[in-house]
Length: 332
Ligand SMILES: NC(=O)c1ccc[n+]([C@@H]2O[C@H](COP(=O)([O-])OP(=O)(O)OC[C@H]3O[C@@H](n4cnc5c(N)ncnc54)[C@H](OP(=O)(O)O)[C@@H]3O)[C@@H](O)[C@H]2O)c1
View 1 (cartoon, protein in one colour):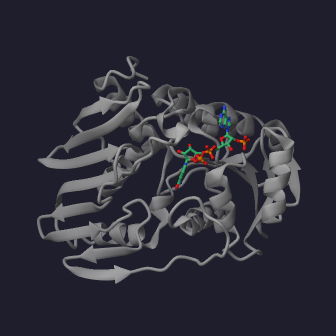
View 2 (tube, rainbow, N blue to C red; view 1 turned 45 degrees about the horizontal axis):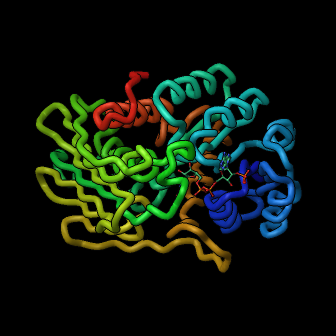
């Protein structure tokens, strides 16, 4: 039986997610309904993607009994309320990154997922790319020895994107793009809690973080350095240096199409589409969709690759960065 997806919001990433879903076999994945705040937008979205049902409120989607899992593609300030709404109606949820705005909200959501006994995952799509799977396998086999230094960066000129720079829309470099480097370091260090988090950066005139470098230090003299900026393009690569070699992840480190291990490159291809995509390599969203299907088929309530505990850890690191930059005063 196909996994029946409900799509929450008709924005850019929802578009790309549905296009990616439709690169997968129709007997495995179906987008069966979409909800937007405006019924006409939902209808337009449904029509352009051949989705049978369109709703003008998120509540109607939550109440639809013919949905296995809801994809939340709305902006992050509304993630908390939307995810709680879907949990209340017993829905499994795949929620776009960042899971929520701060650690308090993230803990509230992970606790609610457990309480409602539903599947819940933060949509760090990168983790399900073949290159990331290969990285986990290489690290497990200790091909580059013990990892000592990790570097990752995500920079682009996003100053014209309101969602990236406006505080009320959830703006800020770390929440929007720096989180990719943090999740990368966390994956490489196996979800270990860093012994220290140090952040230096600059704020934008809207009060959100604009350019930030974060240093995570781990016991045993191991370090991760993550840079993100909303101002300019960076090489957007990542590097893992071990005692016995180097793994390089060429641009884009969040959706890599090649991997260089001790100088030897492997290339990957993406599922093709002729439909419009807003973001680079977005048909790679199909990898996480298929992962969610496999988790649901196994009856899992969380992903073994992107666990709820790790989402809490990522949120705690981001919170510490916000505190050090003077953006947040609260410890969650
Ligand atoms: N995985 C990735 O590669 C990736 C890429 C980009 C973004 N993202 C994440 O996806 C989320 C959405 O990003 P996006 O670029 O798709 O954003 P977007 O197109 O600007 O907005 C997404 C949707 O947010 C909804 N929304 C709900 N309340 C809103 C409000 N008060 N003001 C404005 N919009 C509101 C709207 O839903 P309606 O349609 O119902 O009006 C809108 O269509 C973010 O959390 C972002 O971090 C992930």
